[in-house]
Image (cartoon, rainbow, N blue to C red; front, side):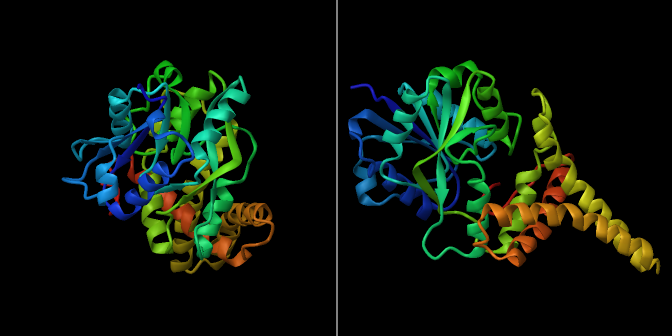
Length: 320
C-alpha cells in the first residue's frame, strides 16, 4: 500500500532527541500503514533503539555534512512516496493527534495550503523556553504570514509548485519557503494539536551562539522574494542596536558621557518596545526582567550573525 503521508526529518548530531521525535510519530493515532518516515542524516551512523530499528516505515538515508538543511529536506522528498509531506526537525515531540489534525485542518479550509501546530512547553521549562514558546504563539488559530520549519504539513503538489526549499540558504530557509507557499494560498497555525521543541535553548550562552548561527542568512534570504514591511524591522533593528552600542562604548571611552548616554537611550527604545510586547503576549506570566535580558542578548547575536554571514558560513555545535 502506498503511504498517504511522508515524514521528512533532516538530522545531524544528537540522537536522544531524534529517538523521541520518531517515537512520537509512531505514537500517532493513525494507521502506520498510511505513512512513512524518511530520515536524512549527516551522522556517520544512527543508533536507534531496538523498537525503532524494527519499524519498517523508517527509512534512513546518509548525506554529506556539506549539504544544507534545505538540501536534506529536498533529498528526503525525492525519496518519498506520500501525497502529503510532514517536515519535522529532529528534536520535535508531537502530540499524538498531530497527523490527524494536520489532515483535517487542510481539508476543512480550502484556501489553506500549509499548516503547523502550536508549540507548548516541556516539563519544568526554564524562563528562556517559556519566552520562545510565547514568541512562537504570538498568533494562533488564524492565518499567518510565516511558519517555522520545525513542523510543517502540506501536499507534495504544493511543494513541487514552489520548487522546494532554497538550497542557497544555510538558515532562514523556512522564511523563504513559507513565503513562496503564501503566494499560492494561506498558512494556518492551529492550537488543535501541539509539539514540544525538545532542543529549545535552556541557557543564554546557548541562545547567543544559536542566534548568531540563525542570523547568518538574513540578508541572503531577501533575494528572490518581496520583503513585506512587517519583516523590515527584523533586518534593521539588530544591526542598528549593535551600531549604537559600539558608538556608546567609544563615546564613553573618549569621555563624552552625554553622547554615550543619549546613544544608550536610543538603543534602549526598541529593546523596551519588543520586551513590553512580549510581556503582554505572555499575559504577564513571564517576568519583564527575563524578557528584557532575552532581547539584550538576542539583538546583538542577530546583528553579529547577519553581518558575519556576509563573509563566511557560521556553525554551532549542532549545526555545522
